[in-house]
Amino acid sequence: MFGAPILGADFYVNQLVRMVRPQYTKAALDAHYEGRVKVKFSLGTDGMAHDIEIVNSPGYGMDQNIIEAMKQWLWISVPHEDQKFTITIVFKLDH
Image (cartoon, rainbow, N blue to C red; front, side, top):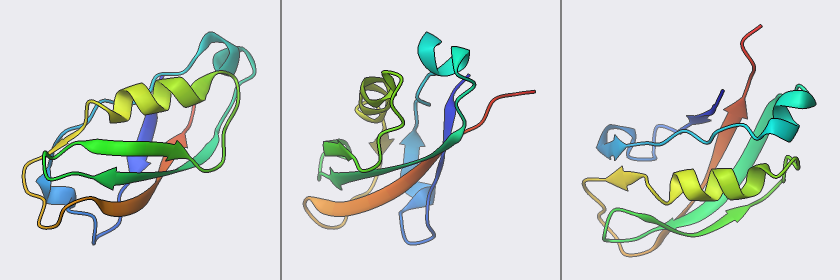
């Protein structure tokens, strides 16, 4: 189980070349958690997410999984240094 990000049209969607989806924790699975989590971060000229901040924590120990997954994301082209973005990650269980 994992979370799928919703990326806005202005978010260099076609430039995202590696995306690791955040995994559910056992606690989140046991609670049948589903929802949307907003995440703020800076996109560095290295193409990596930095200063990742969970805006509305889902709880269940999920914050760290989200942050660790996003640290592995990679964009191939970043026009400005340390641009700030907010994205939404949707967590939905397969029923």
